[in-house]
Image 1 (cartoon, helix red, strand yellow):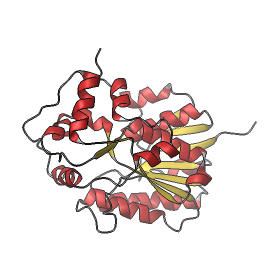
Image 2: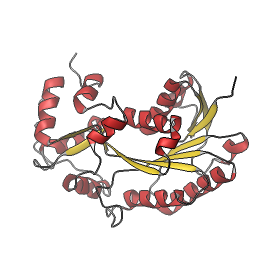
Image 3: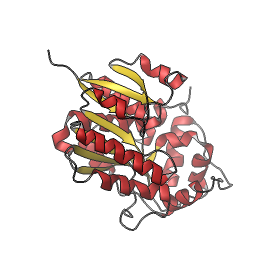
Image 4: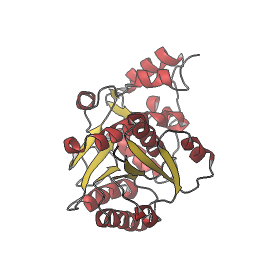
Length: 277
């Protein structure tokens, strides 16, 4: 019997990392090293009982010790607002991945609304292009995920308040559940030849603010009717203003065709804490 290939998942207690760990486990064909800064945290302890998962201490930048064993794949997202330090750590991770014979690296960045080359104007988001560029010309295979806004962001009151205050009524706002990002990442690792060397803009739904209000009321019984625009912390406010005016590139139809079962907003709401009892 062959030994299961090992996938190293960084930030495993974060939204995308946790979803990727769960989705890889569901496939039942990989050994998963779930990387976290604090294995004693409650969120890390919740990973321990997931089949095929081994919780390990570390992060991007403190990663060399993981490569004392064969690693087939690496999943990571960009973390930290010290862009120079983050890019240095990511380059180090990619260098050792290449040196140690990693076969496939998956990076989850963001859909940049067609502004990849000219920039969004937000350093953290624009740095995702720099991360993508670091993947080029490597010996390993790579895939970039470019998800749109997370449905899970609706759990944050300021984000939800945008729907009826600052979002433009004529725009379509695209969204995806982090659960589906994890499933897509797992599928990419399981079927690498299909997705090698590609950047995948992915979305689960595309709705105007009015349509979001209708779906929300139907599923939850709650009427979204905020009147005061939300206040975001400095830095986040400029990013939110950009995404308010600019529509994501991802195609819901393409995503559904290539990754069947991706959730629309109605489906996600029915599985969320917002659903009517």
